[in-house]
Length: 95
Picture (cartoon, rainbow, N blue to C red):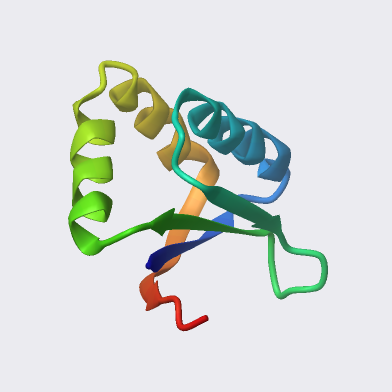
């Protein structure tokens, strides 16, 4: 079992919009996902954890997601409100 953790630094004032965008994408699928909003941190941050049985499932998820017609529109807006992808990590679940 694996978790992909994506950490984003969001432009000031756009965290709620970014969260709504992520929630909208989560609602379209069935990949177990948790989203965290910074409470005390050096900036406006969002963390997204996506859970996969194996690395092939992780790759298939992103291949499918990027092939969707709405992805281009999503990414255009995302790039306007998200300053950077701070980390893109894959963790192996131990317990």
